[in-house]
Length: 421
Image (cartoon, rainbow, N blue to C red; front, top):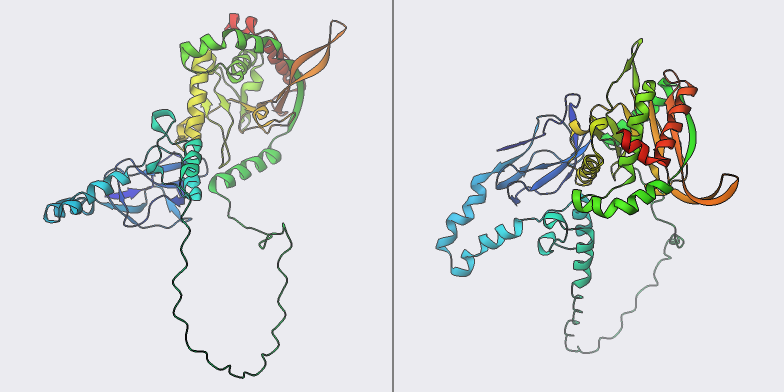
């Protein structure tokens, strides 16, 4: 059976084999991950379609076309040990079963497999505590801590003492060449490490560079009092999670606020095609999600008609797909407006970059208690800075400021937004 590079989208024609998870000659089980491939949009795993013995035909770092054969699976090779087992002794007859059992790998993410290799822990021997038995980082650390320390090797027996040998007069050694001093403490022997850019990082670099060159990007700022949103989550968060099996986060409320504001400022939800401005009468909201490979932006399709629970469930699903390299091109296509939450990383204030061909992106930031003046009195309130970057070719300053002010009003008075929705 041939293992081919899967088709991941109409605009993707090639991929790079980032890492093989198995070696030639390994016995693999159906649905077991074989390798990770990178395209200019996503990183995903290729799994075995049947049981068999693996033979690799392409190496790590090699660029391959979509549909190319990168490995083969020999089902007969996997069955051969089982057919010969009855002729062997009883203990040997059990060996294929043990090997088959060992080949069964519990659910684990690529980053988890990397950590397991660094710790020297076999994932098959770890009981996963995550969802559906998934092995988590904490499980690997506990397994590594629970391993017994290696026994100290006993010194080899000394040979019996031989009769003393008279010393031999040798000529004095030649002067040794000067030895370079070792690197100072804290200084690495390799001061420069050069690594090739991944396909995803190349694509990100190209797109971000084109934004600066092909758009007239400006950013306007405001701040929102998060008191009412925090009160809403505190009051209804527990009930919301019990009913929908997902937390009520900030993102769904901001998505709802943006959908409401986009209906009042349609130019913020538009894009340029040639000499035309295309206005969208729907809200496909991109949610920026960070990963070890880079930033990806899955899209909430038809967000204006989704409930808060549906938004949170889809966002949680996107985050899990990104973490486990299961995100699909279909999840990333489209998008009329984007929201990026730098606050989860502690960002106080930043200038987000537009995701072309969209005309605007909203940046959320960390919530901090600050002194503000309300009704001529200084009070302490949880405040969040908001940033809207927009393409000035489509959106005028008046529209950008008005849109951001409307989002601020909805966040500060969420009941009005929820009643209108």
